[in-house]
Length: 108
Image (cartoon, rainbow, N blue to C red; front, side):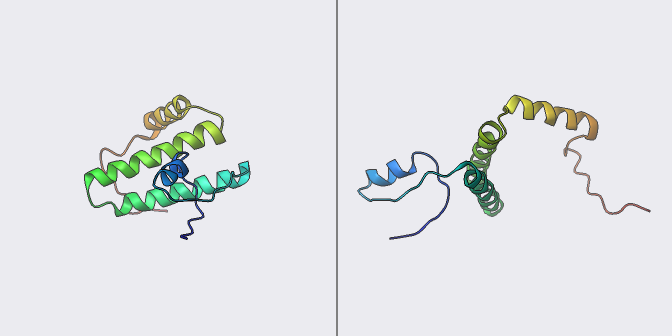
């Protein structure tokens, strides 16, 4: 039996069982859930960084967005609209990344 010990999407146990395999799961308490979501976010970002094709990169970005949506809604009891409002304010005040500015140093 392979050991995973990681947060997975809700339907993964059902998908595993549909292949005739058994799996063992547990339901996390809120503190552990938050910790595992953060670990999952790091895992997905690492997978994005290693993506070799556009398709793989977009798939990993979709996974990252799913985790972000879950963190926003379930953990912080907010909405993506609120996050987008904050993003818009930051964009207005500090700009975006379109100009590809790379800061080398700041004189003291």
